[in-house]
Length: 220
Image (cartoon, rainbow, N blue to C red):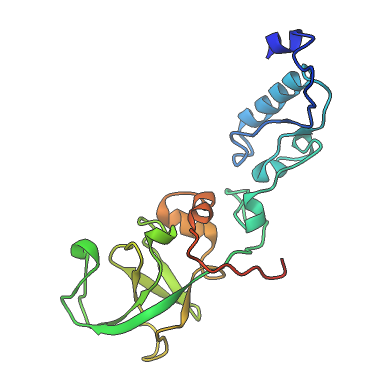
């Protein structure tokens, strides 16, 4: 940077619109790296042509005014992902993900479920298959649950390419049928909670969701 800044012709013909950087540890508000990076940003910025500055991502916004500069860049926070992981989420959830039931059936004791039969039925239960799988971007490791009318419906076995099997025994018989929708992300399970089950972060959950979903924008 010093060599470039020392060249009086380095920026000839270049219109510098913004000077930008990205915080590495903004989701750890007490970490000294945040102030260190901000001070280094200030030092380097002074070497460049005068222009508006931008440093704060979603989490950086919550580090306070010194990080805001001329433009903040909220990204994940706009989708309800918690920008302050160690604290209560200051954002409202705005994403809801639902999947359709394609069949329901009774399973007897001893039946193996899914690839590898990693789940075996220990008592008679009612199962439902939903049209959602890793081909849609739902992580194979996200062995979680779906919800219907605030009732948790655990996954049975592995997440398949195009389907997941649910235990719906907690619902009244016949309450859930083919064509009904169950919730994967929404009031019952946040994006961050879904990410926790997959051992990842909310960013990856949302950016993994593929083109096969019908998307509906409400009040957008």
